[in-house]
Image (cartoon, rainbow, N blue to C red; front, side):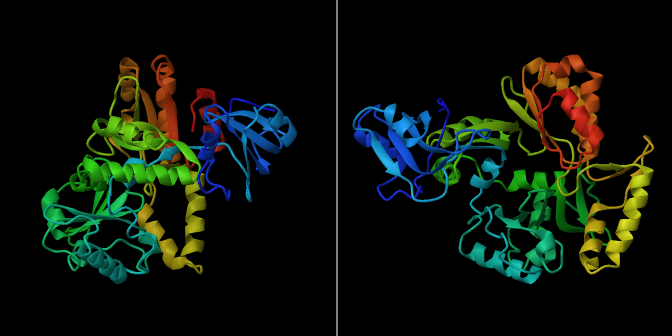
Length: 432
């Protein structure tokens, strides 16, 4: 038997006599025995037959007879009807603040097949009051550009059909790409002569006019401008509702990977009120601005999402050219061409290798950020999807091991890693 494991049970446990909170029905400290399905206490142990719980903690796991013997007379027993019983889950990379703070979150998720259908859906939702009513910005979220028939985001001109009299921000599901209507471009001060922000891109037509589509830092600037205030009863209820949804999935602890520092305490308190422990990774006013706060962890963006920083050797570029040719003449050539145009072709840099993707200024300045975090006693959670940004993190650690050793550093995503980088990550002792 094992004891002392932290568990969380949901009301949807297949029990005909009520949820697991019924342990309190038998009196304080009497606990509950659950059985009837396989019980897993540890990943390296076989399933057990039963589990005993007192005051929200596991006190015994084993055979039904063994577990019964540890509990006093009058203990409530519940026979579960299906599935399995697992320890509660920890999700280390959520975006709960962004999702729960936005009334229009996921309203557009896979609800339209093409641009026309998406714009019609936006117009209908706005007419119903979803996404904000009255003056100021309207905002909806959740479309996926490559799932639309045109394999792109709508333009400002197309969004004007849905709303042309006030700013509108429509965000892709990842937040790394979005589009604003014509009043939105005006509100952001984006025109033909507006330069791309560092770490972002303003998509333009052949004549140089902004199309309304914004990538990475440009999208994050629009996100900050269009975000509703993170306060009030409605905001708190959305946080709590999202927390209850997490609990229904067995998730009791999260790392929230883009929380504005001023909202962090309120967010933690709202989640705690429904039984979810939230660990915020702090940003400033914008998602791409890390907030260094003593004792907390800052979220740091080094590269883009869909436009992450990839680096190639000359041999890899040759292989990429061959694969690109095959893809662009194959059955999925339309998708291949779209992906190729979005990613861009690699260009050679001073290090002799080939690079693609959007990089944030924090990539080249990561060594300085380590120093700031060390001085403040803060941690760093680093969004580094491509191998180029992962390598930049490791290079900065190697260049200043003293400062790096004083900072809790973790990598978020690290989705393109070869064997050499994997070994360097292990040697540095940083979590991914």
